[in-house]
Length: 165
Image (cartoon, rainbow, N blue to C red; front, top):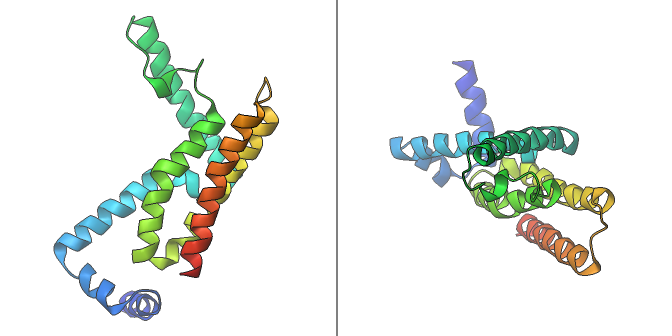
């Protein structure tokens, strides 16, 4: 069928023969499906910042409602569910830094075409950091500003290095 022909023509241009052969194995296909499903689940961090921000705020509000319920029931409130302690900006930098980007860096090695998603995620980490500087009150101390800037810069350097490799 025509769709398969188009796929084959495009796939050979962006995937190595070894990767294509690997995906022909049932176990590998199943693992790829799980990878893509997980990427879709955390994809808000890979969307343009205006969309990323809306989704992140909605997810955090869901966490906070869970924390409110935990508190109401006299249960210990889980760390990410405490609306009084969680900073949405730094939590999102951490989410991208520790969960999203490691998976994307590995995925790009297998599927180079997703490099734009990795670039967007790293760019979003920088945007979160910039919004943190503007919106956080009281204004973060210099040591805090430098520490977060350093974390984001490390992500950017890793991205640059991976793109030049």
